[in-house]
Image (cartoon, rainbow, N blue to C red; front, side, top):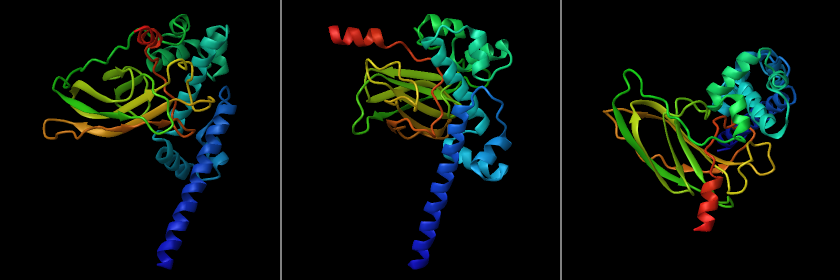
Length: 267
C-alpha cells in the first residue's frame, strides 16, 4: 500500500511539474509573440530536453508547441484588428510575421476571413462555410450528442464544429449552432476521424476571446472519433468548462449571434 501511495504521489508531482513547465512556456509565448521563438528556446524555458518537452507539451495541450504559438499569434492578430486602428502590416509585424502576404494567407485559412474583412465585420462572420467532402469522402453518417453546461457557467449560444484536428480553425467539415446548451445533431458527417469542438459565450459577452480574458469562454471537446460503415458512433456528449491556459485558442471566426440574442429578447 505504501509503495502504491508513493507511486501516486510521484506521478502527481511529475504531472504538476510538467504542467508548471508548459504554463511557463505559454506565458513566455504571450510575452514574446513578435520575436522568433524556437523549440530550443521553449525547452530551455521549460527546463527539459527538447524531445521530452515536445512530447510533454503535446500531451498537455493536444497540439505541438509550434502550432500552439502560431495559434496565439493569430489570436492576438484577431484582437488587434477589432480593438485598434493599426494597419495590417503593423499587426503582421507585431505578431511575428516577416511577410504580410504570409500573415494574410495564414489568417484567412485559419480564421475563415481575410484580415480586412474580419475587421470590417467586427470580428464575426454572417455565415460559416463548411469544407467540402472531397474525393473518397462521399459516404457519410450521423453524429449526435448533448452539450452540457457546467455548474456556474452562464448559458449562451453554442457553436459545435467538426474538425480534423484539435484546434478550431479553418472550415469545419460540419457545424451547428444552438441558442443554449442541449442536444445537437451533425448530419452527413464524412467517413473519417474527427474532433467535435465546442465553444459557448454568454449573450452580451461575444467580445471575450480567450483564456487571458477576465471571463473566459466555455469550451468542450470530444474525440478523436472515427466514423465509418463498420462502427456506430456512441453519443458524443460534451461537458462545457471554462477555457484554461493550456487550451489552444479558438481561431475560427464565429457566427454573429448578437442579432439572434436581440430577437430572442424581443420575442
